[in-house]
Length: 348
Image 1 (tube, rainbow, N blue to C red):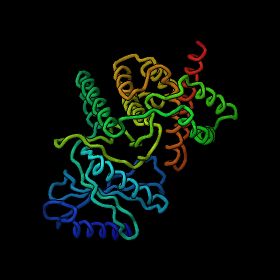
Image 2 (cartoon, rainbow, N blue to C red):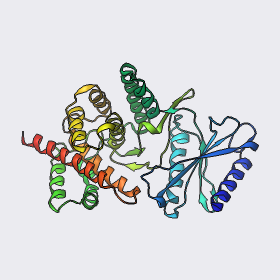
Image 3 (cartoon, rainbow, N blue to C red):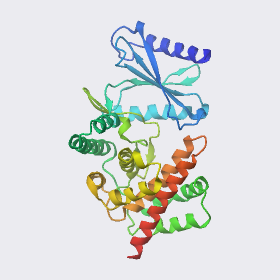
Image 4 (spheres, rainbow, N blue to C red):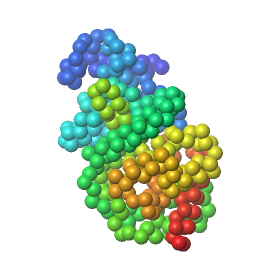
């Protein structure tokens, strides 16, 4: 506890000393902070800390500072800062928090950026759901997806689709890791690989070498008086699978509207099949429209979802201390569904 207090004190001193050079306004003498809790599923040694810093108004932070204590993850903080600078200063995208610096304090790199005011899309959806106003919820959902497409368009487009072979180059490593995580037999990865190899096109619509946001979800998009802002580039990287971001956002929305059956994988998978793969209902229609704007065809979409979930399983395993058995059951159900749908459509 004393060590943490010393670190926070050094960070506060750095902010005050560099207040003017960071282009911040007002008097920082009364600067206070609040540390945001890390997600519960994270392994302790992989925890990421975010401190919001306040002047007079305890509800309006002026600075966000992020760091990790694991030396093996220091590079991720520096990389996130470099990505933010590239997007903000080189690509001139103003819907990101302004990056201020990435100094080392007591040997720990700290990502410092201007805090943005607003409410996340996820929190706004929660409020609308609580009010049980279906009309407003549907309208807001449509607006969310349009804004998400606008963000992806500005970051990723124009896309030059890559070949199926290029996309599948990483799949063998995904399959090997997923086989261990989900406790598969030897035959299952081979079956999935055959399905993925059967994709009928050489060039993959919606793909392309691009910048991936990585954790693109309603919880990481804030909307307020100053506009809409994308936050949290922790998992951002260069990739040929441009479609991952669109599927990440769609998957997050589907999970949000089906929280009551997430603990029942069979029911969740059935709803996913009907709404997403068969485009039934308002949510399914809106998500399909969103994906089509990202050049992803409805035909053969289970191929994209299968690759997305393989990647998602490996990524989530990397942040868990132990991969939960409930998650293993859930992802096995989803993979089985996509394999069955793919096999059925190939036989038609």
